[in-house]
Length: 142
Image (cartoon, rainbow, N blue to C red; front, side, top):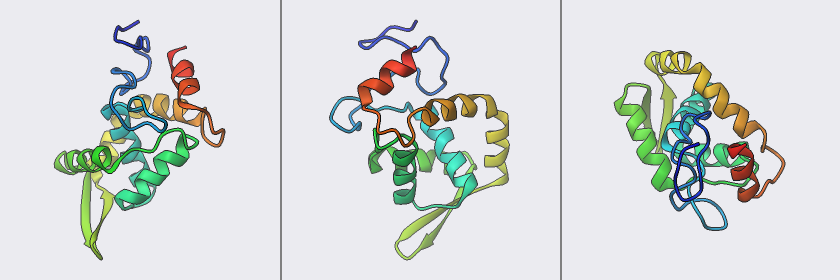
């Protein structure tokens, strides 16, 4: 088990290595998804449907049953990183950016399918259940 103020996750969930550190979880506390998990989750969502940043914030919130809503300060730097990696393109559309996946992004998703499957398994456990953040943290740790 990895250390830290709130314990670790036993290495089983990529992107959750740093626990829930940060400041964007509803009800105060830390960031639920590490940057690695959020990166793959966003890329997967955009692979399903080109989206704007706000739509992605809402999609992540929905996937996690409303227990976590990432802030623009977390989403947009992650989207920029994915764009710099060549995994996404963006197109200006009425003052917003529409993000679309590239062939490189699809390749990255395939290459990291196992990690994404674990992330999806964790998020699926809470979708539609309105689980409180502490309950999510406890479930991910077990």
